[in-house]
Length: 120
Image (cartoon, rainbow, N blue to C red):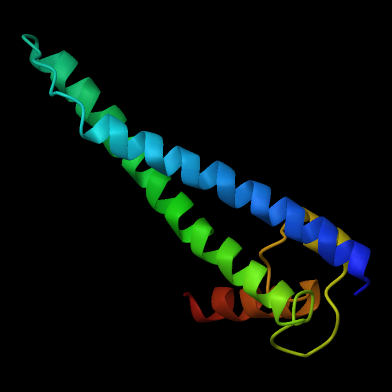
């Protein structure tokens, strides 16, 4: 992969990481805010449902943060854009669609077909 492409993906991933970390900070701030008192049990249930939904989203973002950090490490180690399964280059369009990917489209498709066949 050319240096200009690596620079592009590094900037993209760094920006994404910064964005995700700022969301995480706002969630922590929101969770430590004073508790609301709800006279109506329906309002309380609605608030709890919204809070649980937000926590699930933040959990997914936490997992994505790890993947973004790993992708940035692969850029530093000169292994970014190389499929971990077959060792071939991952196409640039695939990397633009999912910059944290570690597999080329062929290997990922094969893996998903195996998972489907095994019922995983």
